Structures are given as structure tokens and as C-alpha cells.
Image (cartoon, rainbow, N blue to C red; front, side):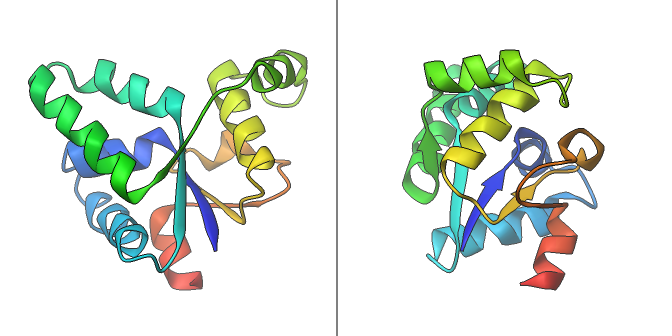
Length: 136
């Protein structure tokens, strides 16, 4: 099963945001053990580096990126994703629209996020980490 993991889910793990970190970590463990295929945008890795710069050293951030590369599929952002996002009249957040385009291109089944309201009207199921674990 293919799932797309939104940036906020990874931040929950890396910043140890209780109570969201435990189910988010469980999803990453499912990816690491090849029980599900986890996808993230290359944009997510860059955003994480920016968001985490006050909590982690540059070396630690690079190590995090290496770990994610081993357990997740990191999807390039394409020109098509940018054009799709620019033309998206349903999703007003540009970065979300870019991620939606990548997720559609990868034919994912679930989009895992804590920001479900911004991912409505998508051709895949949208849920938070806890909901996904209950369904799978």
C-alpha cells in the first residue's frame, strides 16, 4: 500500500510532539519494515531542514535526510506539479497543491496529515496517523 506522509507528521516525530509523535513513529516503522510504502515530497525534506534548523545541527539534519532516504520514497517536484498547483482552484495553499499533485502522480491510497481540512476533494483517502493505523 502506498501512502503519502505530510510534513507535519514528520515534524511530530522529530519534535516529539505528544500525543501525535507515537502514531507518526509507528507509521515510519511500518515503512522501515516494508509493510507499507511511504512517500514524501523532496519539498518536504527541504522544508524540514528549514523548520528544524533551531533544534538540530546541520549534521543532524543531513543524517535525518539520509534516514528518510532509506525508509521512504522521496518524490521529485516536477514542472507538472508546479503547473498543476498553480492551476488548482480548489486548494488555496500552493505547497499543499504541489504535494497533492505529486501524490496523485504516485497513485497513493492514503494521504497522512494532521491538516485534513486543506486536503479535501482529493482522489485518495485523507486521514491523520491514528486514523490510518486504525484502518490498516
